Amino acid sequence: VHPGQGPRRLTDVELWEHLSGLDVLVLAYRRSTHSGFVEACHDLGTTVVAPRVGYLAEQHAVVPYDLDVPGSLTDALLQAYEMPVAAADPVQRTAQRATLATVHRELYRAVAA
Image (cartoon, rainbow, N blue to C red; front, top):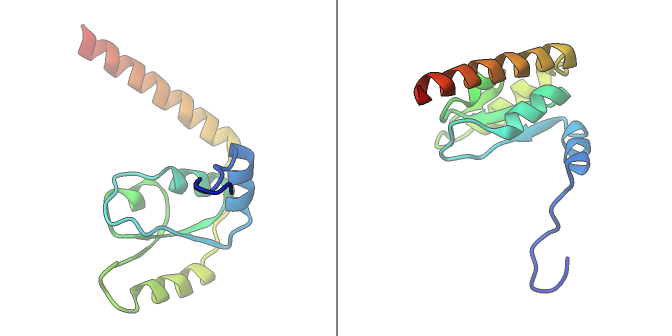
């Protein structure tokens, strides 16, 4: 880090290497709808511990906790330790991406018409 500058931004490869090396990623969002970290960790097989906000748990399996409940994060971390997840199937994720792109394209065409 150079004086007066923040930390260096990781490249995509460095970020994926870092996330894949974690046992658990803890998210501390107070507000959120969705998270790119949840998606990345799903792809890599890294367990996510996430607060009960937004739609994080609807994206993929996460171990939920309550930000304002003492002991909730500790309980979630213990549960995460017992519940390792497998990495997503790249073929299924590619098919999912193609399906979503088609749905979005059709939706945008319908709205624009």
